[in-house]
Image 1 (cartoon, rainbow, N blue to C red):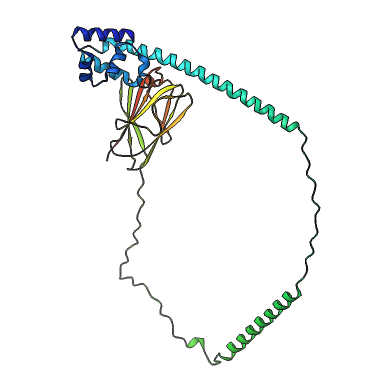
Image 2: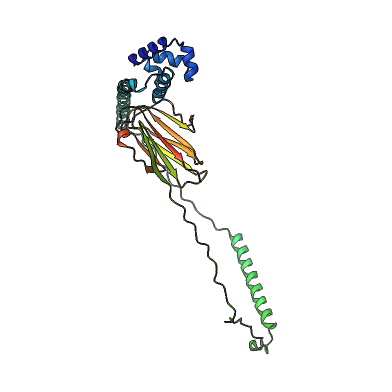
Length: 314
């Protein structure tokens, strides 16, 4: 990175441009430009995925071919990312050792607690309960039963006395039964057939240098899209939705190895979701439970990579 910064600074001075003039041309801040010229790659720790675009803009402002520094830039990023990952792994190992010591202390404390004799609680004597019969309640219930039986008997006698003996059920008028007229056509019932919803499909539409673009189809507006990212190594990571950085969940910073991160977005026509990895090696991605086939040139890359998903509009 030092060689790249020295080369750009030399070209700028040869053209007689101030760093402020270059800032106006490239739309980069003066702090960004100074960090580039000083070869301070750590300044871009959270923006490694965009460092390539910053340098490309600087080269264009100086009429310099970006390909001249492309290889040097990639080597610098990979060296920095590798050293950064080693430090993160050391910190992770120290944390795991601390957790193991704490667990060992807890196991010893539990073992000592088990060895202590437990105090036995005195047994309570069972007291036999004698149920007394309430004579007045039984008498009251018996009177109610007798009254109900008398009322039922009276109703049956009254009903039999009011029936007419000469009534003939056969004298009732016959019930007309509707018959089907074969001459009148009958339309068959209309049954609405259910409309089958097409299954969501994801296809790779384009592959560029360090970037793969996928298209999501057959999703309705408002339907949730769940992008699941599993990190195989510690890596800086950013998420942009329609070119705006996503803050919930937090996307800026370093994600630890074995972290599983979910990015949930509502489906909208022509929505663009960009995942920027600082270290791509063996990371995996699923969309609504479906595994995404990442090109080998990206999945095996020990450096930056961009994965973009576009929702197709109807």
